[in-house]
Length: 212
Image 1: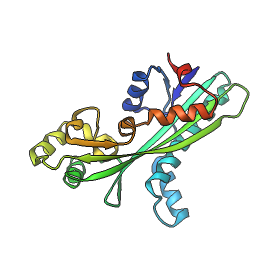
Image 2: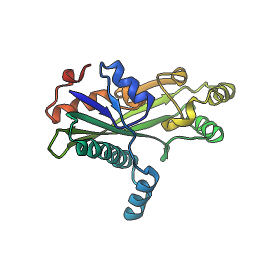
Image 3: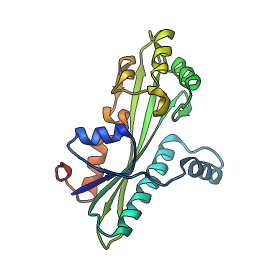
Image 4: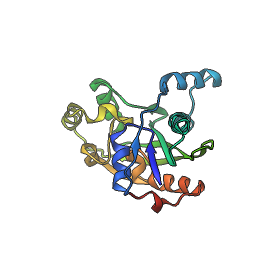
């Protein structure tokens, strides 16, 4: 059974490889900002984080699944995902700049937020329309109270938090600043493996059949 990861995220690729799956990777051709803005305009307000990550995950997986289906040779699963971090009523994607990452870490110090991760899995068969199963996973992340300003500055200077949802990782340099994760830990890395396993089962595919 083949697997295609509809993402260029190194963290999601690493997770699948650690779980015994060696996927193909394809970059979704989705304008995430435009899609989120259009949904907000239609709703008249910003979408809640769980709805937004689901919207983006489904769009990215559907784009890749439709392209593979059009080629007519792929037989397997397409996995798409999206993550956002919510803290104190605010939703945080990737900070991109050192200034924004630093500001967020001063807010997160001693606090607990929720990492929302959307998952969309498509079963693609030659000659048939893709079939989807989708779900959102959430994990609560608590940060140490005694993180110093110098530690925040050093972490931001490493560049790691600039291009990850919420400005932190749990599986690399940022892990030492996290005191507790409530929920599937892989959700915080970028994709809940237990959720993907369940969605694959919903599509009639055994998780162990995905092992390389």
